[in-house]
Image 1 (cartoon, rainbow, N blue to C red):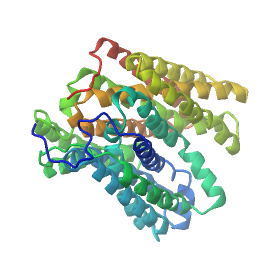
Image 2: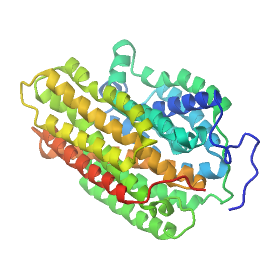
Image 3: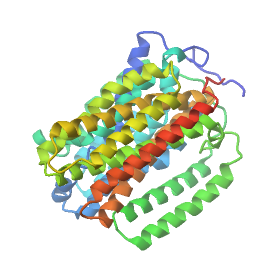
Image 4: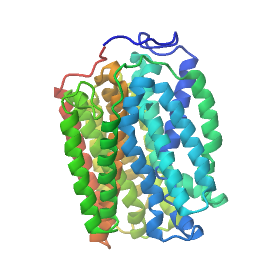
Length: 464
């Protein structure tokens, strides 16, 4: 591929950024991804309050969550592809600006319709951040230290995803719900100022951006996710089936159009790399199990007889354990195979989930806490090595596509996990949370088995 003209700061031929710019860059990358991931779940706790204040039905308020998630999913891979063409730095900075301005709009929204529209725009901004996050990490750190950089990034993602309800509860204890969004504004401004100084500039592709394929992709994922959410919340079974059918039809057209292209929007070229495909499958399964567990656990803790305050405290060991394990796993990933580390971590997570599902009525809080910590340690041990493998398995020119798939796998798993728990709650009103934990344990074990198969695959190595 011919080389495109780039600025003197371009890092396509260098091995990461020099210190201290490297530290400023990773700080901006981590702050941006933490904000965007946290906003996926931070509004859940406030939905009843938002619905009451804006005078809308509870069922309608769910779109405050769905609009954000669907907007990210439909735009994540197109923005990753755009990043390869106009620069990862530009897409990230634009995403930060859109996310920050949309957060302000959410805080000032006078109606539910305005809030949902602002959440859609905020989702597009978050997708800009997420789509190029992994690519920026790859060009920020030298390859020999990439594992620890991915560990720091994975820590931010995992902890942000897990502590959303806790952060929301803390904010709502001292301020109105609008501050859940307003707090992003000063953080977003500071992050932008740091990012514009420090983020790396990478070589760009000269391939044109295919807008028709991006539209087809958006229609496919939008219909599939909307249909899945409608099915999970029993909004309208007929409408849900129609949306899912239309999404599948568009998906078939998308696959037929993109399958044999040189650099497709959905990176089939990367999925032909065995270790990359196995890492994506592991990621989808693991995040499905994680989200299913995190949605079900508050209800399961309540079913076991604990109150609202205890629920928050008993949920805390999971993200704390992830915070301890993820950086350690990142360092280990520079020395040991991700298939081994990921398999061991997911097996531990599966064991912890099974022990939680079997937790007896009247059991001690200490016994519940160490089971939660085991899940967190297992998940933290898996995520950093898995992400490192995905990033390095892709050629440097396709770092954006690899990062886009990394984010898509996470969001797809989380969406499926949350929807599956909602369906189980409808099918088993009394013990749905308990059955969901058994199901999550089974999915985590399946992910562990998929992870270990990577030991027989060709190890990931930096590609030209």
